[in-house]
Image 1 (cartoon, one colour):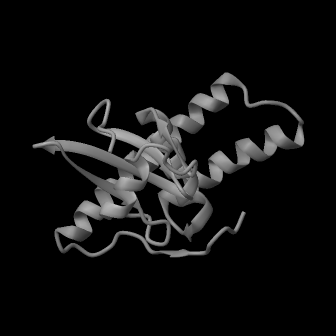
Image 2: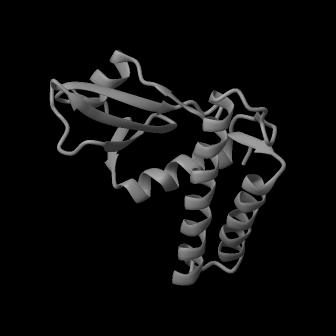
Length: 150
């Protein structure tokens, strides 16, 4: 078993993301993105071991925190549909990607930064939404899982 270089550490894992931490006594715990709900849920021991074991499957890679946020939001944008501010921001990001693709060019630096800002905002908004729901408050928006709808 390998140990984390930093705590928390962030990874791409299968078709989502996973965040691992060593809070105490060398026990690694984690939160894995559930792409059907958009929420982070406790990672199973098998998932954690799969990321940390020597010669682990190539279906993961270590990420910076910024890249973790981006890949989490790209997964949510791909697998979830709904109405409200989060989904409006996803549509704005998609429009920038589409425009660059149609013009056969790379994203301009200001477009990349705008998309990063949008994803940081959607990531924070999801976290706030799930905290409200956990506290027993009613959802502020509805969404559904659509699989790979892009």
